[in-house]
Amino acid sequence: MAMADVTVRGAGIFGLSIAWLCARRGARVQVVDPFGAGAGSSGGLVGALAPHVPENWNPKKQFQLESLLMAQGFWAEVEATGGVSPGYGRTGRVQPINDERALELARQRAVSARELWKDQAEWRVCEAASLGPWVPPSTTGYVIHDTLSARMHPRRACAALVSALAVMGVGIQAEAPDQGKVVHAKGYAGLLELNEALGKSIGGGVKGQAALLRFNEGEVAQLYADGLHIIPHADGTLAIGSTSEREFADGKSTDSHLDDIIERARAAVPVLHGAEVIERWAGVRPRAKSRAPMLGSWPERPDHFIANGGFKIGFGMAPKVAHVMVDLLLENRDSIPRGFRVEDNL
Image 1: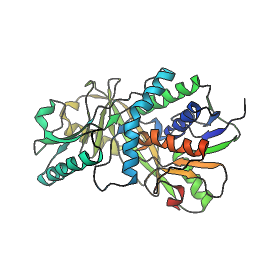
Image 2 (image 1 turned 135 degrees about the horizontal axis):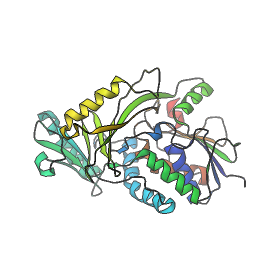
Image 3 (image 1 turned 90 degrees about the horizontal axis):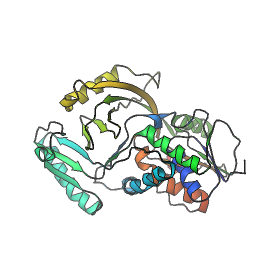
Image 4 (image 1 turned 120 degrees about the vertical axis):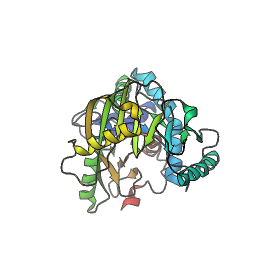
């Protein structure tokens, strides 16, 4: 094999997206992961690409907005190259509004969204009845409907990237020596390694549990109700998630916490009663100390870089993460915002 310009260690959503964009820009890339693509939290079920609320604006929210807006083009190019659909669709999101205070706050955010999102997406407060039957019960009779949220199937997204990379001559290797610049995108395990290497805690993991139901509602919006993401996928399944467990003994087992969110989802969306649960999933999502993705150079380790900490928002952030990381790797151009930098977690 020819000498690689970039070695990406970790074949989750950050690692695969960075490798893809490196290859698209002409770099020679190798991806190394002993467990294969999407083996960690990137192999989950939910795939909610949902924005932060349009208020108290900050660099993290702006970064996410830009990433969500570039997602359609990013994933269309991946699919066109590799021939595998990631299940992406900007189908929007509906949230019930259950008290008058929340209704007033939602209306204020609608004004903020017009200022911050401009004409690129809408955050609307509307009568629940105006959106048809696929709406969870709302005490006030009103819901939030945003047109920025999108959905994708995490495993299919990873498979789409693997296929596109293969067309570009890049495979996933179980083992290989470092060549060129090295990107460490190893998720939860990588954060634990960083903690040990740097002698301090800069991140950890949060366990999540999710379920997949056999339920085909067609091309409808995702729902956010009772703190749960309810995502109708393009393949006729529906995902429900997820728990956020800071303490856990086994990161891969499901238990009564998942039973609870399935029942809560059925209470929030009664038409889900009777839908068959076809898969139960658990995994540990990487959470950096800053709660934002952790990007940039590995301190005092030349030509080594970190892309980690995509806790809950990794798939939504991936297109923009890939762009800023590849700018840094291939052009030495640093556009990583404050709050996302490795040193912000030290």
